[in-house]
Length: 99
Image (cartoon, rainbow, N blue to C red; front, side, top):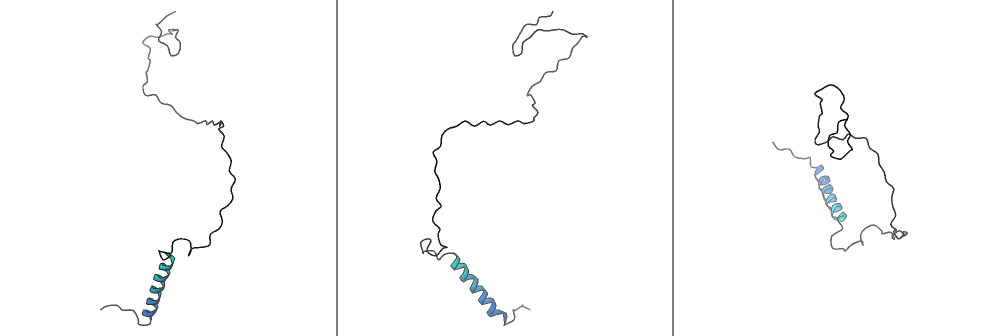
């Protein structure tokens, strides 16, 4: 058993299909018209101001909250009780001088 559409819907379906194909073809522009002849009206370009650029400095600063983790670390654990004062300056390799 095959389903068929009622006969009164066939002409309407054919009309709608042809209408859709016709509207689709007209919306594409027809191909060889060469440009804006069939399109919407074109407005003139807006006038703009032009200014020469001059180099200037820009003060830009940002502050962020972050955590810094080193690639390598050292843990110093004493083997005796007490304080051992050592005189060293940051970033230099000094010989150990105990007071």
